[in-house]
Length: 234
Length: 88
Image (cartoon, rainbow over all chains, first blue to last red):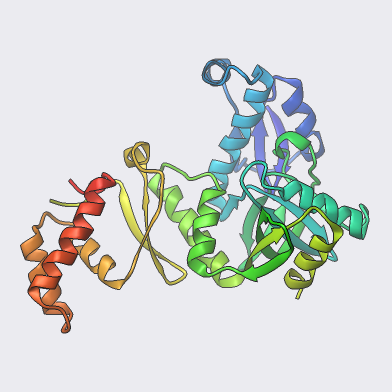
């Protein structure tokens, strides 16, 4: 088993395939004391996932379901995953969420174009970890970042969340709590175990009280970045 | 009739929300929000009850509801929950 530090948690993993091994490299860290999370799959489990999803390779199966295991256990540490592209700018994290193909990575790539890649840093392009530390929300890079490989091992305070959809013109508005709630639950991994569901509910409850959630209709343009940045950075 | 095992009603940022856990997640992956009277009826449905019994309790709790309206509203509510596989 190898030792990693992910989202300030001691994690044990045992990557068999190259994809997981490579993605996790930046998170290798010898830790003292006990592990918080063990995320490993047996060969049999990897093969079972592969049988169910034959269009995925064995190494993709290992990568995806190791991530799923990590995120499920994250709920025990005041943390959750949001299916979003997370970008850091001026010490604040902005999350852009959407269903697959919804334009979240495209939008954060435009942030990088507008502000520069050294200023606008992709924390995680697909599945950032969010945690409550000392009563505040933080966004963490993790090795589990979907197809694009874009993730950075940093911790940034969460400023705002935005749900993105394609539109003919650019506009942004604050979402009501009930709208935001539905979207957040649709874009996270819902636990089956009731104790973990209670954790998720308490995190989302605090999130809706503390963090503004927006709805962005946008084109693929730098003007769209101005629309989102101006509203969300206030 | 009563609510099946595996459904929980919780308040999230001022909203009454129902989600499924455990085996119930196999049949129900959605989410339901309830208004105040919906949440009241939900609490009654935690234990085995009938539409008539709920209608009486509703009239006892809400002053502006008569028994006929309550019965109709509750029937509609329960039909929806049965349709979603939440009440048996």
